[in-house]
Length: 263
Image 1 (spheres, rainbow, N blue to C red):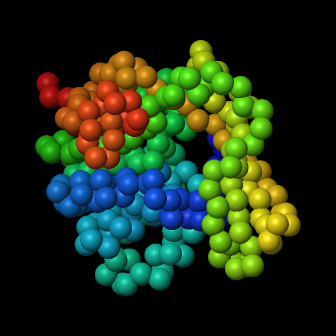
Image 2 (image 1 turned 90 degrees about the vertical axis):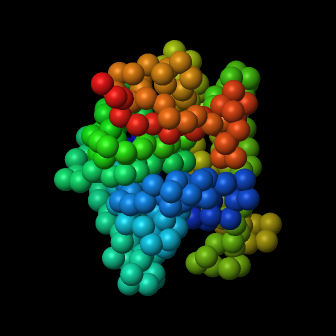
């Protein structure tokens, strides 16, 4: 996806995700930040759903994102925080495949499946190598999560829009916004799917606005990750299948905590 494709996603991002009861990743990454201490780097920080919670806990955190639209929303939210929180946050526009900061971090996180926007092996390796370069060489940790692929679901045809989530429009309380998803295709050889988010605004039962933005996401297998880690000079410290730290073979989520490989 190009940076311009995130404009509409950014506009509706907080509405889509902040109130979802099934999202329990914030406490996981916040706990890691508290255990490891700062500084923390969040790659693909978006509108700050996780970053702000870490900053509010008193930990120095740097955020980088590919989308200026996402970062502008985060900057506006940050202006509403206390000065001591603002002073703990540094934000950068950048590409996870090639950014470079003059700093290393005790904890680098890539939450909320952001690595699924890397579509080629070259991009995936570059993202891991960039993250590794920014790890404190002594005790730095890299943590990220992605979906475990549901191959049965990927095999199913999907010709109709599927309702996902709804929320009150913060700019017009008479309206409810409902997000739908449709999948157009699955490339099994290169392991990605293409589809779209459709945002529909309703006043009562009347549809008053409809917007659509493309969505492309890769998916990974466990052995593929082992090869990517080996090729990037990383090794597994912990691996989980859920944010409750269940075994990874329950096949819901793949969560990894990595460190630089020891020579």
